[in-house]
Length: 167
Image (cartoon, rainbow, N blue to C red; front, side, top):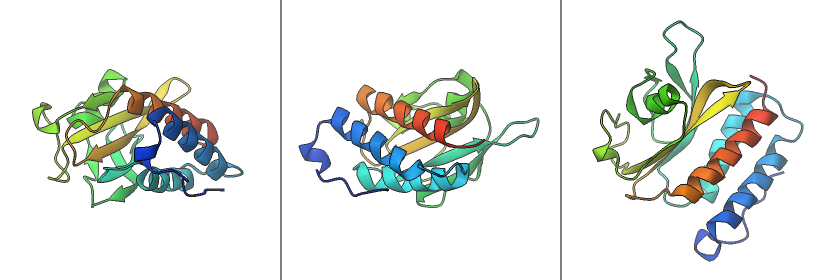
């Protein structure tokens, strides 16, 4: 079961923070396989544990031939509902099949500004059986908020999510 982190972000090194995030996620997902329930709890936990975020949530690929991303559970201001594969940071992560870390979203060609306050972004694809089924998207109002440690920590968190959830 989820427990609030005992240490603040400033007191904890990022690797330890992401280790704790993984432990908390494993606890949250114990006995629950529903993808939406797990995505909702993961969004809330990330928003609670990680500082300097203004959006944390999921987009899932629909099963239509055009394969748009459709907003899923999230924490933050209302979001763009649909994003075409190849558009914005989320769509580009799907098209390229890799995580994308953007230091300044204003310098990313084709960035989709759902919240004008966002300055940096990290998007991690969700893979199930080798196929991308969606993305985890984090936005921050702080330029340069995300680094390679964040990318690795959130890629590990996504693996815990996809392993624990039925798709």
